[in-house]
Length: 246
Image 1 (spheres, one colour):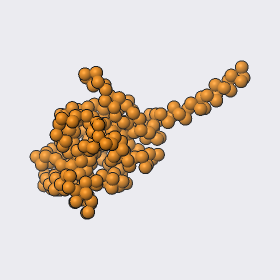
Image 2 (cartoon, rainbow, N blue to C red):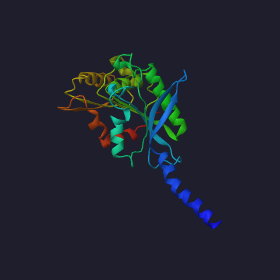
Image 3 (cartoon, one colour):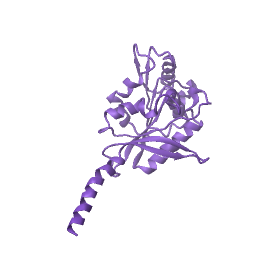
Image 4 (cartoon, helix red, strand yellow):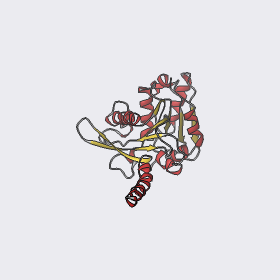
């Protein structure tokens, strides 16, 4: 009897770390679409999450190369790359969906109202229901194709986000008035040949002329990949956390 108790205790001690590990870090999730099909996505859960405190949330929109069937997975580019380096201390619950629509023009795949954007918002909603999260600290960011999506979703749902971080993308100048009061930090490389830097410059200028106070970082001599340096900017996450939606 005593030996059986010891065996049970040993099994519990072995199982507990594994069980705990499965509840944090990069977790694979599945979203069931209305037609019954399933779409995979990734959720990063902070290492110290125990369900007692509300977590700030980031929705990340990847670039064209990480679309379903692409050369890389969304978690292997952009914010996922940064999180892997600081996983033990990164405090944000982070949702990383994957675009699937190859028929839609690249810059519009994450646009508000598109199938991929609608699914991403539903994944965000599902994740916030599953984990204890702070509805006033939800942040939106994306790179390249996802940068275009960030500007679009910000204009469509300005009340949803505490702050946005569009990287090497572009938006509709007519949306400046809608997002002038939304904390914004935009990044771009001045040697970007894939998405011209003027697209970020003109958006920032339009928001500023509308009365907003966006932050803008332009990297001299940097091409399309301005996201590695942007997401490695530690001040960025402190800045995010300093903002809450009303």
